[in-house]
Length: 138
Ligand code: AMP
Image (tube, rainbow, N blue to C red; front, side, top):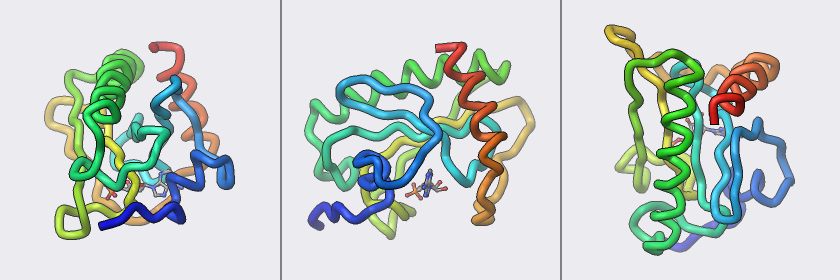
């Protein structure tokens, strides 16, 4: 499947719609998921086009994983988490909804389940406060 530049993360990368930024470097951007399934739910994307893992280059994957590792350590520290789940979906049948490669970084606590994906958009001030906590831990 071809990359479609009208996807929402491409719009964020072009600055056409806002995001709550956590971290960026030359190759990647990390920002808060707008419909978090736990506090501190971050998405990591490459700045260059890739639909998902299936068409990404080794360089894109390597850059993303370096940022995923960095953000994982930061969310664990920021939310006093005991662990972190890293999730990633490929194509609709694999659960993918936004067709620009992304990794979910989810701080986890013993015995605490992730929230269901209800489609509820989190309040911007809460996303901003959580992003600030993570940035301080980077
Ligand atoms: P996936 O199902 O792996 O494709 O996940 C897509 C994720 O993108 C979901 O967790 C959504 O909550 C999230 N999302 C959709 N639109 C935005 C947006 N504008 N800013 C941040 N996250 C978004």
